[in-house]
Image (cartoon, rainbow, N blue to C red):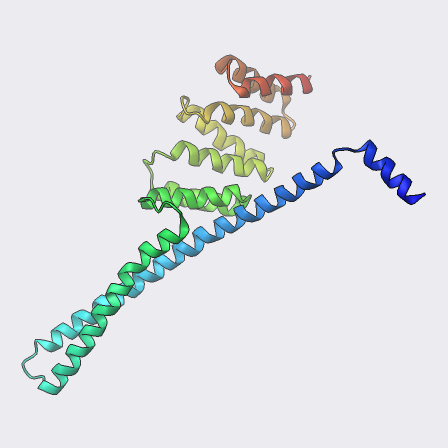
Length: 237
């Protein structure tokens, strides 16, 4: 009797196994995204430690050189210092090779990445991993460091969208509105206007929300966001 019920249920739900697989794949993707974000953070930490270590080694090398040039140093001590200098030079060569090895380990192509781009990608990885609070902090720090960055419209959008996903709609509105007014020609402007309208609706302000959804349709008539705005307008009548 149980097997018959199971068989009947399977026949009524032919997509159950597919849905299970999709759910599993989604979980795997989320795990990979989280791992990627953690990898960026670890790489940055390693590079910071590399810089500190290299600075200490360079300082030691300068001190050895100063002692070697001192005429009052005995030949025995000079010989020991020469050996130590050789060891320090060998260590410096190994340390200098470390950043390129770390970079190659983090990407198959190992392209040349500027500090600005690296910081942006690190913050974006946090956003993709749905670590929204950490993403907001990372993008905010990016804004302070790179005030004239080519990524500024994207950074502002991801900050706004992080607040949106955290359901902190008042702060999402402020940042979405800034995108629309500061970067009206950005590819993120239509999405920002749409989500600003939805944020108002989520706060219970249908008047301002519907106004912005209608503005999306007028301003970006051929965009995917205009189609979405029409759907939401129907739902909020």
